[in-house]
Length: 132
Image (tube, rainbow, N blue to C red; front, side):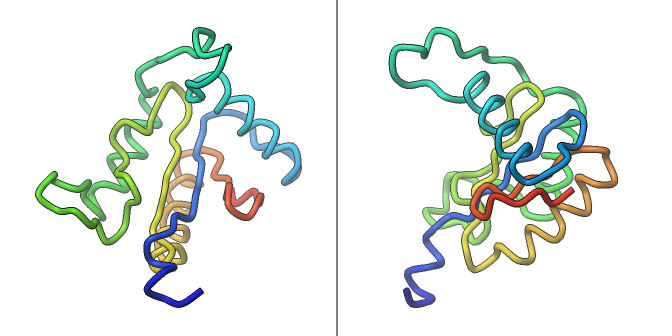
């Protein structure tokens, strides 16, 4: 895959409130549970999903990322960092982040630092790795 192709693919991170899971496997299970509860909106169980506004810490975390890399304004077709922006990807205690591959390393490093400082869990969905 060349760099022109990779820049349009997303690297996925998830950040949530809660106790830090003891392993990558446990973090993956926690992520799937949270995603199923708050995000997944297809199939026969869609009515079981619960929309909740983001918690205070998730909203503050999102704001810290947006301060560094603002959301697309709608005037841009191709945002250099976010696959689909952050606003709307935060629900209850969970934030799902889609990052362009060409920015994945820089954004992940900052995302982990901020999550750690705020006592949040950061999980690399693409790699299945617990980061904080």
